[in-house]
Length: 496
Image 1 (cartoon, rainbow, N blue to C red):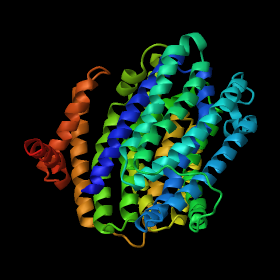
Image 2 (cartoon, rainbow, N blue to C red):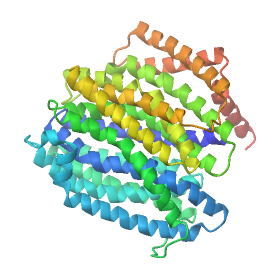
Image 3 (tube, rainbow, N blue to C red):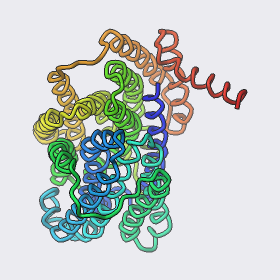
Image 4 (spheres, rainbow, N blue to C red):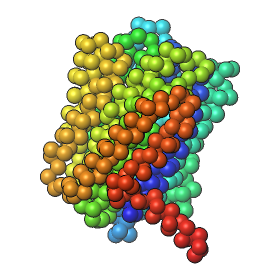
């Protein structure tokens, strides 16, 4: 159960981060609504934020963790750590500087539809400053990978919460007086605070590297694995650029609707799948039982993703209204963003399973298959999004439908090429069936009570409780985990 404990620790910290991320986004929605400022800002923030995912929970972790774990077992990790840190920092600095120099061309590439719109120059101006955030968050990703290998998951996950908190404060204090400057300042200061938050924990574990130009013996191995890993996660991140690229040709606000809805969608996705994927990668990298851990990860993620997906589909409009429906965020904005969120949520379970299965490949040193899977998924998304949005005239909702559909394509690709299927299929499908039945009943309950945007404050907890009780009635073994954890807690209180 250590795998689940690490995953829960990561998920709790990620959940706190997402909550503060919501506060940040709610403040942006309140002060700027859906406007040319938000479209420009979300375009400008797209590239450094996507590279954050690439350098963070993405390619670097997948390539670095197995090698560093091996060196740590051999007690030879110090030289490798310092060598990687030096060259990683230099590379990160180079990418940041190139981004600042070629900002205008990058914006024209990822959002060509705004080139002739009046907020193009604003997007370029913002992006030049936001690229500095990439340097800070790149170094944060390095310490995140190192700490994860040592079994520290809460601090790296909560570091993102520090970023969200600092940015939220900047928007709350400076939006009315300084306008969009508060957005830019919040990102830069938040990135710096996020990096500094890792330092005390890294120091206490003796993981502060030194600068050296010496090339460690495993540096070439890391680069060999890193290139396809970065390509794989980079291809996966292309889905964000596809949405931005196509949305730039739609009416003003399309980019903002996608952002606001996707941020809510990322809450369960980040809290569930990323935490489990990182925990599974670390567990498999140190030689844990692959069959039991993989089966456990699949069951755990499925049982949490199914009700999250169903709840988001049924309550999408009410959730948008509760979280964003104030200030300059209008009723029309609520309706459109709600539809986008509902469609995004259809792919939640498959996105989650895709991340978990990809970690199995990475733990085995296989970085090529996830690359091709991501490429297949992105191609599927591009074609489907174009058909839904422009041929079938579904607009911004069609873009979200293309994204949701691609999740199934990517997962099936990984599943097809999974040769060593270390999983108990009978146990998994039994849990999945119980989860589907419980989710169906839970959704019926939500449809019957028809909660408004205020009522969902009690409707969501009661629906979650109903889902859990149904799993207990269906005798799902993992449903007893909260009870076992509670008993263990009570036992510790009695015997400190």
